[in-house]
Image 1: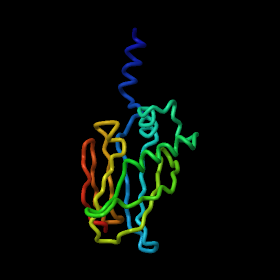
Image 2 (image 1 turned 180 degrees about the horizontal axis):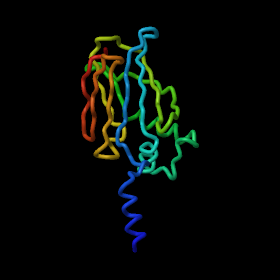
Image 3 (image 1 turned 45 degrees about the horizontal axis):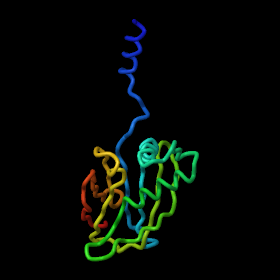
Image 4 (image 1 turned 180 degrees about the vertical axis):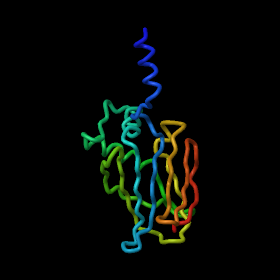
Length: 162
């Protein structure tokens, strides 16, 4: 009985490291050299695999299975959009993905409408799966960053491209 109490105390004392962070971060920036809109999505691997599992994938392994990684990249690209109020959505090209540390990075790009343009942004990355999920979008770089925060049920939001 003493060992059970000791084990319970140890489990409570040390947090479990493999838990869902429930946050995805996307960054949108204008590249003046190429005149492209560059989008990078960063999602914790653990969350990404749980998201695929909740969508019906059996034993998803994003690190070892390239097709599983592509499946998640397509999911992210379908849950993220950029547009202008009166125009069609910007067509974002899915460039690919990579694993770094405990994250999957997904890259997209499109022709840039240019700095100062008002954009209509939507990021529903995993907000359709978990109600507590937060999907953040950072616009710009350096000291000129505006952050939009999306949660389940949110609609697109307006932001100015720096």
